[in-house]
Image (cartoon, rainbow, N blue to C red; front, side):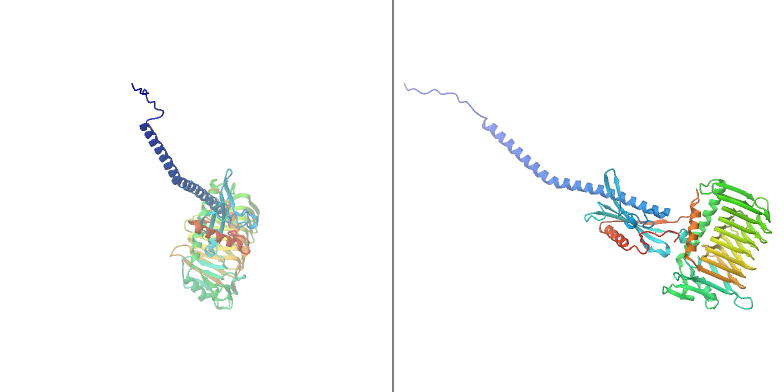
Length: 546
């Protein structure tokens, strides 16, 4: 019998082929997923980085815009408030001039958002137009990889500095003239002695017009007579000259008439506010005096912070009259509700501002054989489209400041005749109205500063007379210190207003933002101005009274 080994049962030591196959497939899938994830991450990582960078740049751009607006507000505040705390010019901020820092940093906590810098550039100084340019940069103005944004704003002033042109004599606005609007007595025994329109600095034309017809009438009348001197800058050659060439035409100065009308309205509103206690300005005490005759006695009115009102509704026949050697002295603000007359050797001396405002007819100051001295502003504003009069006969008049006769829709008259009058005004003499009348006779008149005749913006406005007669010596001399002091005095007058603000001094018109290369170009313009700031060593506006 043949022996056969017994068959032992087979024992499996691992997975079945099916199971192994399934495990292998799973491994492949895992590997594929891993490779896919790696590839996906490789694709998404730059995108995420770019997104993060974009978000950072957007955040920085937003921060820079905040810095830019902070710089704009800072610069405009200097211009509007007439302040220059860093000494590099009004509206110039962070220029590095006069010890100021080069760029003003803006931070939130420990994070610096950027730095800003502002400068002011000429556009048309003759029109008081300038460009305020502000640059904001991160991380600094000098970093080669800096991010820069910029803005430009046109700023213009129709205010005090713009109301009064820098000329010895100006006739502004749209007005018609009569055949004899500009006249003088040039024949016979009683003749004028001399009339002079002089800019002693030779920096401006001696006479300035905004209307060619009026200019031609003036030239026809006044140029060529040996007793008449017209000397100043030749507007055509920008060199000193004497004669007709110094009579210029500047149609853009018509805004002066509008500015004077705004000034008159602002003054009228403030006088009412002060009297009713609605003003929070300088004058905290109001004193009302009856109109009366002061006959040979002495009185003192007003004081610091006091507004004195002469009431035309009370006794005295609608006027206050000084007569027979009477003397009145005072200070503060004097508001004349109707008329003030100084007669028969009397004298009136005031240190402060005088406003003639009120009355149902016309308002006037009249000197008749008296003396009238004012250090301050005299502003005459008739009501109800009536007339404002300033007249003198045998009077002695000294005004250090401004005499503004502003009859916006009425008549204004300055008459220095007859008699032997002497009048000296260091500052601004201005007349505004629909009908304007200026006459001198037997008078020595000297205006050191500027005279402005401005017709209201109305086609019916009329320069009735600008007339010199009988032994008149009249000199209109452009005097920079006197004019500067007068403008400062007017600005101080308006600064004392409370709830009724003065007419706008500066306004901003237009706003343009720059980015990229255009922004860097603006910074380059700033750099050029700072490197060559001019004789004043500043990169902003000069003071408004200069």
